[in-house]
Image (tube, rainbow, N blue to C red; front, side, top):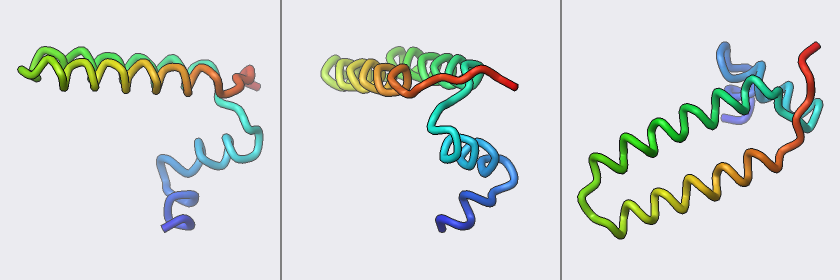
Amino acid sequence: MHDWLVNHKVFGKYIREYREKKAIRLKYKIISLSMMWVMITVSMFLIESWIVRIIVGVAGIIGTIVLLNIPTYKEE
């Protein structure tokens, strides 16, 4: 599965780039955070339970913190 993912036509480039540089391009961070928060916001409207909404929101905040703590490098 590792080899399949690293050599994947779509995801492989990004995985190899991260493994080599130990950083993520700013453009990809912005895209990731935007997509993540759009889906979290949509989920908040679809979920009826306040407890689950809070859990989804906290998970989003944790995910954001983790992503922002990964080093960023400028595009070549």
